[in-house]
Length: 69
Image (cartoon, rainbow, N blue to C red; front, top):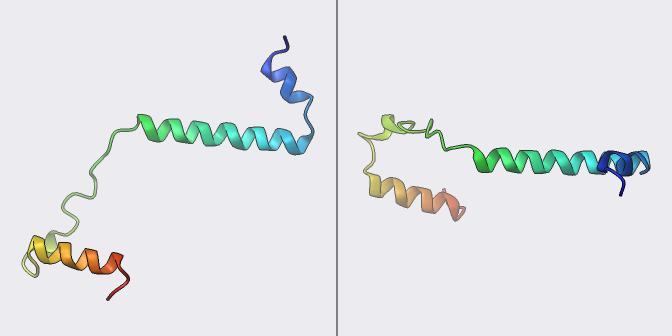
């Protein structure tokens, strides 16, 4: 049985490019799965603390998601 490298070399340049893109997408997917959340966004809305309650912010977010302003 031929190695994967040998089999890829037999493909046309266009198909080799597709293989390369597919492998890259798999690597990207694997990196996403293995990475832990950073929570670097925590505290980003601290300046709104005195303007809105958490419930009011939840309602505004729901409105934004629904396309309202």
